[in-house]
Length: 99
Image (cartoon, rainbow, N blue to C red):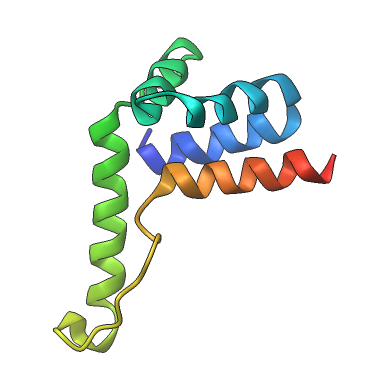
């Protein structure tokens, strides 16, 4: 399973389970949130490591840049599109506020 597939499944689980969502959101408060998040994922049975997550974001961002204007220097600068941890946290935070 790829990092994106793991995050997608984890997001689905967290949207259904308020306690899991709270645990995942709490990782943001840690000194090293990404490490704590990935450790929690592994405890939950999802084989996810920090470099898997970072690499997935960078690969996604590079693919997106290459697809715009040929990926050259004139490609638009995209912000936040490569941080899948923060994107997941934003969606969980929105779900938390909606309840």
